[in-house]
Length: 160
Image 1: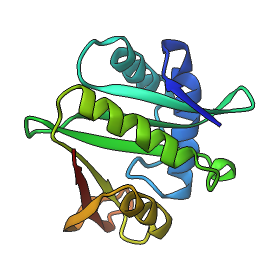
Image 2: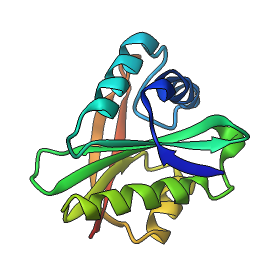
Image 3: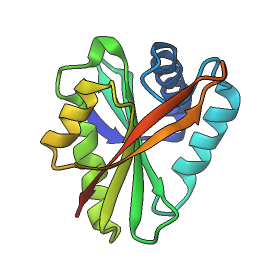
């Protein structure tokens, strides 16, 4: 598995990964994913010169995961999002994507990288803890789902 910066032509594959992981319920994005709108936004991010950045995880020539960072509301803090296909998990790809995001955050002068994760996503939480992220808090019943239910999220971050 290899990680590289995303290119505009990767947008459709990245959205397919996102849609598949959304179907599993591991991320805040819910199905059905508006693939055209999401791909358009990804292309805009890729082509922009700002602090936001995107990477893809490739295996066998195909995109099996992606990660991205964008500015948060707090100056110097970047927010991380990541999605990896089920068949590609457990092979070091998440750690490699996380490494790319951390390096980018350091290089662009951020002092902190933050993320949100479902409290029941033990596998992701273990990865983040092993990479030096710490639990900063809980947003209780923070995300309203399409079915009306509420989900809490853990806030985790790593100082750079």
